[in-house]
Length: 86
Image (cartoon, rainbow, N blue to C red; front, side):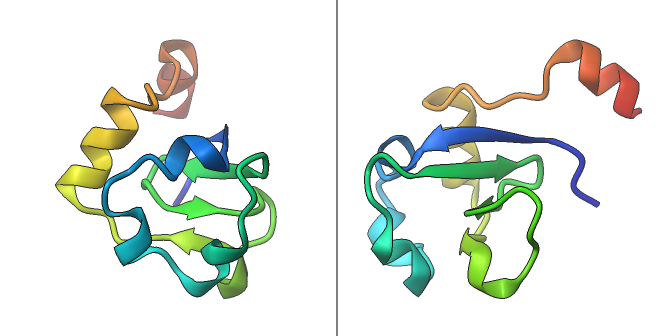
């Protein structure tokens, strides 16, 4: 179950080297200034509240994607929230 997400500009996640190879078709329509949401399971969606398949932009979680998210995007669950979620 996903518990936490963080918003990013599409231009930030498009920096991932595997972006064009592994993205869903709906991600091709993203403008660089669109807001996307990265969940704690490392899936990327258009909306944090709608969980339909057409909202998923990227869900091929690989070690490279996880490393990009943590190293480049600095994605992490804030410590105080991580504690509350446990």
